[in-house]
Image 1 (cartoon, each protein chain N blue to C red):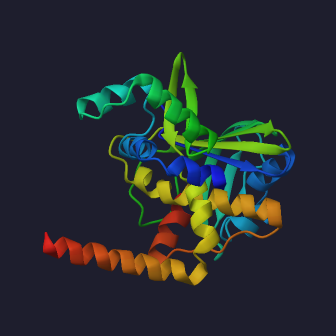
Image 2 (image 1 turned 45 degrees about the vertical axis):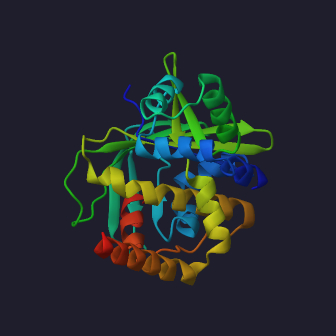
Length: 159
Length: 109
């Protein structure tokens, strides 16, 4: 197994079931993932799809592992035209109960050497994860606080 | 949030975060070796203690690979702090300002 390139951890005051639903259901992701509808509710072999707020397909990637509400792994190759053509990377979510919270770990790895996508995602995930935490704890996701360019990049990488 | 600020209030710990920012996923041994190489005297014990405090504050995330423990800079708590005090509109303005600052400073180099 390759060394993960990015590891993000956040503690969320919600049950693993709730966090799992938020990660896999499009009607929930839309409320914190900056309007993106991300459906990862399928079984291994099914597809993870994501649509931008404008309805443009941003992802159609394989679900590699799905063990609710503990572990979810899917491929990662955004479909935007202006992105570099790189091979598919991989995102792993691990959910562990921690006291009355959930410890959510997101690992993103399997990039090519010198990957540009690799640089892009470093902005996307922290924004998505803080918004997810805010959504589950307060019922409201965060508005993106970046300029248009940063938002576009982060959304492309984090959707 | 207190624990994050306390963890950041120490220059050795900020140095360790800088090291992970430069190269994510280092082991304790690698961190110690590279610190020593650049002439920073920090004992293995001190590095280990600082890493534990950073991990407690969730500023460092760790992953086990076989017998190795890899350390990653975890920017999520810092992002949460930024989100708390930097609103929707200020974000873009601050980015513009920091881009301007960088540009101006570059010209002076």
